[in-house]
Length: 140
Ligand SMILES: Nc1nc2c(c(=O)[nH]1)N=C([C@H](O)[C@H](O)COP(=O)(O)OP(=O)(O)OP(=O)(O)O)CN2
Ligand SMILES: [Zn+2]
Picture 1 (cartoon, rainbow, N blue to C red):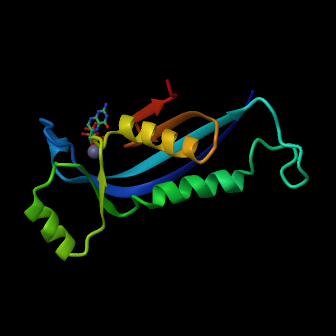
Picture 2 (cartoon, helix red, strand yellow):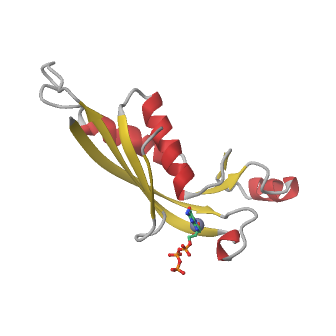
Picture 3 (cartoon, rainbow, N blue to C red):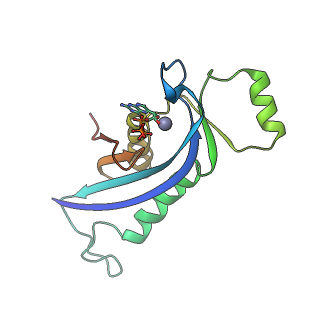
């Protein structure tokens, strides 16, 4: 089995809704997303011969997925009042609503699914919320 690994990152604000502790407050992270894909074979076509996929393609796809969240405020559906959202929108802030609690675990599963949807055979995705705290998702 061959494995390829690449990474990307984004800076964003979030908070954990209904969390008791400092993380209930709006705060920021530089989220680091490390993706690993796998394949038993290598490509035979001229351009990509000897590769699982071109690192350039994998890197660009992961970057585009991360760019969606870059310099945004990530919030879970239902976690902010309409008037708060309205005020943020009036300020033209970049808001990104997610249907899950924005934890490192959920983001690891999110990027795993997004890369799988693009056709990659994903082995695992790691998401670092801080240099020391990392969650991994490897699929079911
Ligand atoms: N299992 C998880 N636990 C926590 C998550 C998470 O995604 N998965 N997230 C948070 C918060 O987002 C928080 O920002 C992380 O805080 P903390 O662990 O305290 O990290 P810091 O390095 O910022 O804390 P220091 O006080 O500087 O050590 C909470 N838990
Ligand atoms: Zn946090």
